[in-house]
Amino acid sequence: MDLIIGGAFQGKLEYAKRHFGITAADVCECWPEKEPDFSKRCLYGYERYVLWCMRNGKEPQTSFDADKIIIMNDIFCGVVPIEPEARAWREKAGRVMSAIAANADSVTRMFCGIPKRLK
View (cartoon, helix red, strand yellow):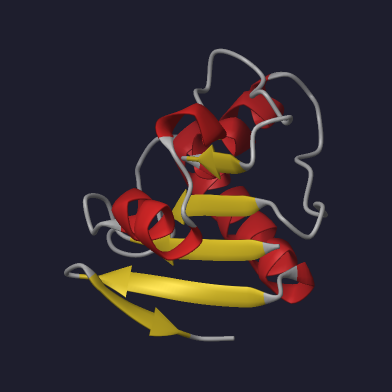
């Protein structure tokens, strides 16, 4: 399993398509309004699924099959939000990302479209 992290609009999905050869059909974009399609090879915006889990009293999945690609925005950096839900989401997303990274075969951070392999 591979984890790709970075700020918003840093080229994470484009990198995954180029590096892993995935297509749009392989990608499930996560949203806080619904559970994602875990049958897809790539889960994009996984931090939004974490918010869905929080709102629905579920624990986010942190272990995946070897061929899965997880893409997350690092929402836990920067100014701490005032809203309690946003603060809790930020903390939960950071903890989930850490758990996924611990299980991942590779972790890549994208910054300005440049990949940096962390693991």
